[in-house]
Image (cartoon, rainbow, N blue to C red):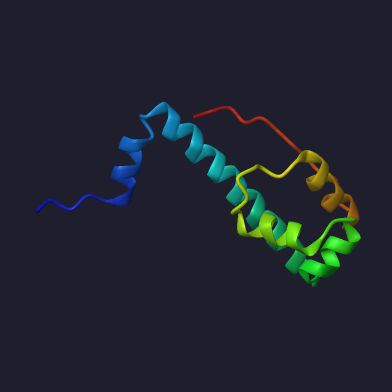
Length: 97
């Protein structure tokens, strides 16, 4: 039996346009989640403390950090989080390789 790597399976699946769009959406949510977790931990804050500073609730921060919400976090929420920690939200478009 031939073994297939995850990279090979993923490469084949990414040829499917619908799958590719959904996969990219998940990648974005997970990247945002990792960034928020790192920022919160660097500041030494709990989810509750971050939520209070950003004028939101702890469950909202928890869902964002888990990346399990079906939606991509709103720019409004990300901006509130950034400003609450003395940061500025930066968005950019990168050229596709």
